[in-house]
Amino acid sequence: MKLLAGKVAIVTGAARGIGEAVAIKFAEEGANIAFTYVSDSSKEKAAALEQKLQALGVKAKSYQSNAADFAACEAFVNEVVKEFGTVDICVNNAGISKDNLLLRMSDAQWNEVIQVNLNSVFNMTKQVIRPMMKAKSGSIINMSSVIGEMGNAGQSSYAASKAGVIGFTKSVAKELGSRNIRCNAIAPGFVETDMTSYLKEGEGADKYKAGIPLGRFASAEDIANVTLFLASDMGNYITGQTISVCGGLNI
Ligand code: NAI
Image (cartoon, rainbow, N blue to C red):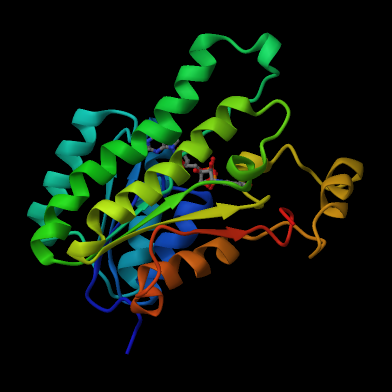
C-alpha cells in the first residue's frame, strides 16, 4: 500500500526545486496533487510537471496563484475542494530570499520577504483548515529554514520570516490538535536548488560545506523524503515540531 494512496495534497511554489521534488514524491506514493506556481515564466515548467505527475497514475493540476495574496489563496483552495473533493495535506513551500545587510535593506525588501514567506503560510493555512476540520484529519507542513533557527548575517528578513513560520506552526498545532490536524515545520539547511545557485562549486561552496558535518549540501529529494514522512501516517503522533534537515549544520 502506498503511503499517501488517495490523499489530496496541495503544494505551493512547486514548478521547481523542493516543491517539485515534494510533488513528485507524493505522487509516487499515490497522492492526487494540486500545486501552484506564480510567474508566467513558470507556466511551461508547471505544465510539464502536471504531465509527469499524471503519468504516475494520479490526478494532478497546476494553478497560477500567488501564495502571498490572501484572496487568491481563498479562491485557489475553493477551486481545489471543488475539483478534488477535499484537502488532506498542505505543504506551504513557496518562498523567496532578498538578502541584504540591514544597513542597506529597504522596507520594501523587508516587506516582500515577510509577505511571501510568512503571510503566505497564514493565507494558505487559514483556508485549508476548513476542509480538514470537516474531514477531522489533516497534515500541514511549513517550509521554514535552518536560518530561522540560527540567524545569518545578510538574511535578517529571511530569518525573521522563517522563525515566524516556526512560531505559527506551534500555535496551529496547539489550536487544532484536538481536531486531528497536525502542523509541523521543516528546517532545511543548504539545498541544491535555484535559490542557492549562487553557491557554485569551488571555494565558496567548499567553505559552506566545511561547516556541515555531513560535508555536502542537501538534494531536494532529501527534503521531500522528510516531507513525505510528516504528511503520511508514519508521522501520526508528531505535531508542532520543527524537523531540521541540514546535515548537522545547526549543531
Ligand atoms: P526555489 O526558488 O527553487 O523555488 C521556490 C518556488 O516558489 C519557485 O518556483 C517560486 O516561483 C515559488 N514562489 C515564490 N513566490 C511565490 C508566491 N508568492 N506564490 C507562489 N509561489 C511562489 O526555492 P527552493 O530552494 O525550492 O525553496 C523552497 C522552500 O524551501 C522556500 O520556502 C525556501 O525558503 C525553503 N528553503 C530553501 C533552502 C535552500 O537551500 N534551497 C534552505 C531552507 C529553506
